[in-house]
Length: 157
Image (tube, rainbow, N blue to C red; front, top):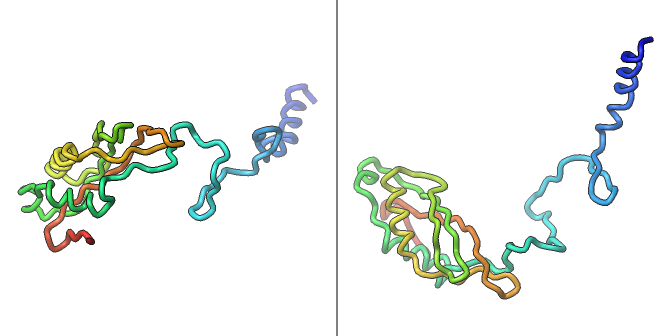
């Protein structure tokens, strides 16, 4: 047998065992991908330096945020004519001072609603900033801005 054929046969014999397990940390082996499931999560022994212990909060909580949007969001006439309802999902950064910045549309509803959501969100007051070990840290948040007619939009008090 030629040397190349022998090498090929040897590689075939070794390859299934070589690819069955992947080396993991500290000499352990991983048997497959790690799948995270709700209710089966564990706290990290050494969390990331930017992961907050306490999330940022709008003054008055979620109900007050709903009232803010009811008072400041003006339903665009073009959206009203087309009967467009739903949420514009924005992302923003809550800074260490609690001020929001870097607004971006993550999920669009319509160009008119997107523009109105950005306009209204720019008027948001300062939030309580997120903290890690008692020190304020900047975090990225997702902020749904509701657009609906009065019959659909209800805020619990």
